Amino acid sequence: MKYIFILKAVLHSISHRKFSVFTSIFAISAAFAFLAAIGCVSFGLAATAVNSSLAFPLVVGPAGASDTTLVMSTLFNTDKPAGTLDYEFAGKLASDERVSAVFPVARSDSYMGVPITGVESAYINEISRGFSEIGDDIEAHDIFGEKSGNCAVIGSKVAARYEMKTGDTFFGSHGSVGDEEAHMHDFEYTVCAVMKAVNGPEDFAIFTNLKSVWEIHKYSHHHGENEEHEHHHETAEMHCVHDMCVEVGKEHHAERKITAVLVKTKNPVFTAALEREYSENGFTSATDTGRTVRKLMSYMNKAEEAAGFFSYGTLFLVMILVFVTILTSINERKREMALMRTLGIGKLPVSLMIFLEMFFISVSGIVIGTVGGHLLLAFCKPAIDFELGINLEPFFFTGIEIRGMLYTIITGVLLSLAAMAKIYRMDLVEEIAKE
Image (cartoon, rainbow, N blue to C red):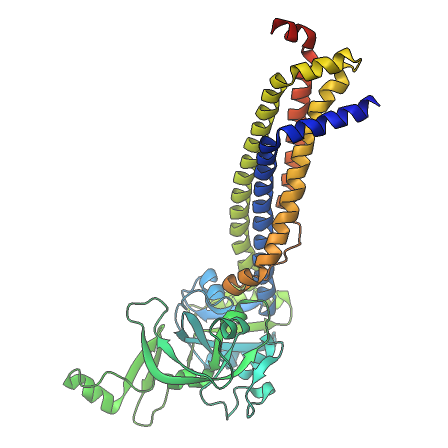
């Protein structure tokens, strides 16, 4: 009976201190919602990166390119390529018995900040999960065939963001995104297919025929600057995009250049051997994408740990605030607790009331923050997916959250025991008499 009375007393105390209790629970909940966001976004980034790295175990590019540049400029389309290779180099790799498939790529222009990459049909077949839209005269298995012309295959997020569909046309921007020298050129692309979502960087990319990349910059658009330029135009022209130089003579013969080759090897041992060979020959650079992505993930994990550290610190400060608030409330409730003592309720049950109150606040904050944070992530998933390209799993519980729960409960229990000890040692009758 007395423990039921204690429980009623706890609920009575909470109801009479609604503002302070609500503030405490809200502060803990906000910290846990932030932890949920950190954990889920980090997991989504890691999953996207790992899935992309598994598709192509090896990337080979020009000499001097760093591992990060090779991966970021090919798999993630977020960095500028370091240079070019001859297209024939892809054929050399394809003939290696340790290689199962090669996919040459050539970064060219961009559209509204989205990179346009020249590839072959085999690459689209490798990465796509089908097409949500495709032109009537386009063959899905050979999308960049002879009839493709200036065909552009766009990712699902590009189509959604810019409201593009098959048959639409657009002009690419010559030069790197954000370059001062970047400008529009007169090569018109036609959307011939929209890929279904693959939940990866490909959703935010535009692909065109590799051959068209070699032809796009055939003709110079800068006439009559001086006689030397005019004479050069009559014989041969050199046009460069991201160091991809295309020389054009009277027969309009374009030099075949690529920025990298994505390689599928037959096993990890071959991957390591090929990486070593093509990194030490002085003409190319190569990287094991899995290892490079793991290295990138280690940096991301450090950022996650730093964010978690500040979140844990915030939680600790909130728990201290709750503890101070409860200690302050003890002085206001001396008469209430003295009355309980005169009714025959012992020191331990009375001090247990303080423990239960703080434990209630801690657990409520954890539950509300965790559930609310994941529900908020589920609500924001379309926007996060659309804007950031992260395949978010809103109801996935990560280690950073579990550690946060553990730390909060331990801190709450320790501070509750400290508050209990203070009540237990107090002589409530004397305290009231002094007043």
